[in-house]
Length: 310
Length: 310
Image (cartoon, rainbow over all chains, first blue to last red; front, side, top):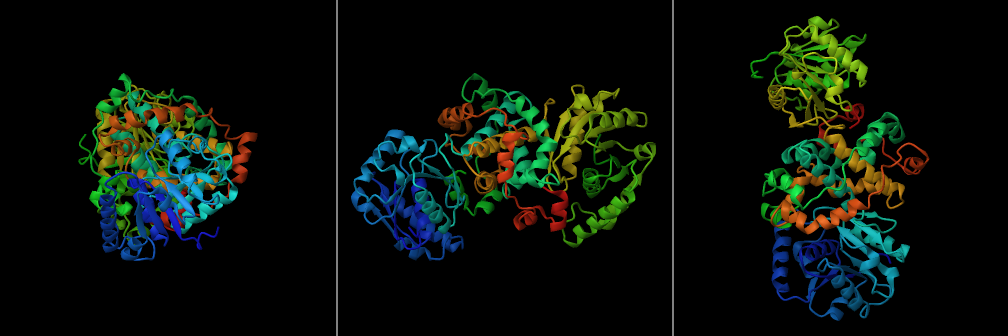
């Protein structure tokens, strides 16, 4: 496929993630057909229409087309066969439950040609499970977005063991074309990359609070006033590379002993829900609205920020 | 102490961190006496002078005083007793080696009254080791900055087991007064909070590359295009709190099973320097200069950014 020659993308599911994918794909000039078997879909469409117009008024609409042009590319279906007709790429965004995902992909396969790419938005399920009921699995992959995809560019592309390299390449090109930042996982792994790194952060932060080392408010400041600023621009490898005169290898020859000693002192996987967790949760005094700085950074209106709850 | 009534701070060591602390303290209106027993100190002062003037010209000077006023607050000494005379707070920034730190604090104690706060910039040594040769340890603490302190506001305040609560409070007030963002560790722990969370990030990122799941470039994108943007504004606890309708407890009742499963699949502490590490280091294609966006964000000139190597 040359993604620039392709026209139609089907989005399965019109929830928050489905609508966000639809907005992204029309911003890239694709005809987007949204499928939802649930009632109330038309109401959801109204909110999306309003959203695109608001974005245009705020000069924050993505892509080169006007809101009206982008809206004209959208259509909705409650018939799966009609929704899939003509599509070269399908992005699934149904409820995050294995059986539901397996079932919709099984249903879809009856209505699409064998070259049509089937992509799932799942965050918690590995491709070999999600696509286990699909016959031709070489065209299947996970394209895991970060919420909200319209504002956070990362997309993790995760292959099934049988996924064709060309399918990964085409999806990478498609995501790049619509302005996202795709990364390529070379094999499936539980949690993919983002949620694994996030889990590492959560675990050590949780332990430090639970062990009485630091408060909830202060561990948040360690990130937002300490590590976070650089991570908004450079990743952990580049940070290390820049932090020693001769780069990454030099960094490790200087600091690996400290890092290894610290890592060796980590406690076990914390209890996030039991009695011990209460000591963390009960001391939490949290804001319920995002600070203004986040709104500016993410180009969100206050309403939308809360709706998306970054 | 009321930190607003205090006048003189001594900075021990005129290296990168020492000069950065000096710049911060004069920006808050304090007289800063820099001590260094090494030759070449006056040359270092020239670069600091130039730096303050450049910052003023770029309208990025911190504090309410002019560069000239701030420069007038600076003085340098190669005599320890003179350097400490009149100070209410001492920030040590000598070479990161236990014996060197222990020795300078032991020397200092001869020249200061018992109420003078002795603070170390150490990042890798716990207070009970650093201050083991000090007699009156109730006035000792670590104030661990993030490099460069003039641009990154976090300061970790870490007590010795004997540190007086009032010493922690006074230091917290001082750091707040000069515009930093202090956090309070309630007890000492190897790596403090920031380097423990950073080690968790490095370990899982390293394992993912070493296990052939993702490239160095892409794991960096997972942070900079995925997690990083939010972490520049909110921490991990607030992120979870905002990611479930009813807050942190609700988040954990929804996601703790996934997080626990992911954490349980983590590999051992990686080998950062041996044969296995070569597979990570050799595939690294790194930039050697910071992207423009980081310079803007950190208000750094290109030269300074590289000098500070964030």
